[in-house]
Length: 98
Image 1: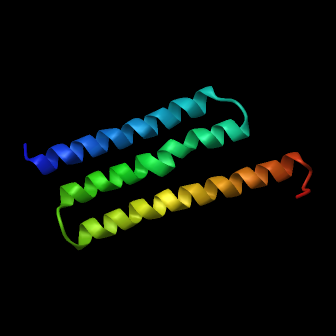
Image 2 (image 1 turned 30 degrees about the vertical axis):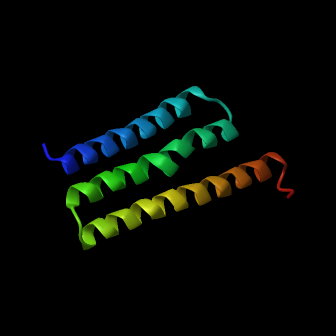
C-alpha cells in the first residue's frame, strides 16, 4: 500500500463515519430543527472528505481538481440548503409571517 492510498482510505472512512453519524442522528432526533442540525456533519464534513479521498486516489491533475470542486460545492450547497429549509419550516410553523 502506498502512502497516498492509505491517506485516501483514511479520508474515505472519516467521510463515511460523518455520513453514518448523521444518518443515525436523523433517525433518533425529533423535530425539524434538530434533524436539520443532524444533517450538518454529512453535508459540511462527510461529502467533502469523501471527495478529497477520491481526489487523492486520482492523483494530481484536472480530474482531482474537478472532484475537489464538487466536494466544495456540496459543502457550501448543503449549508445554504439547510438554512433555506430551516427558514421555510419556521415560516410555516409561524403561519407564513416573517
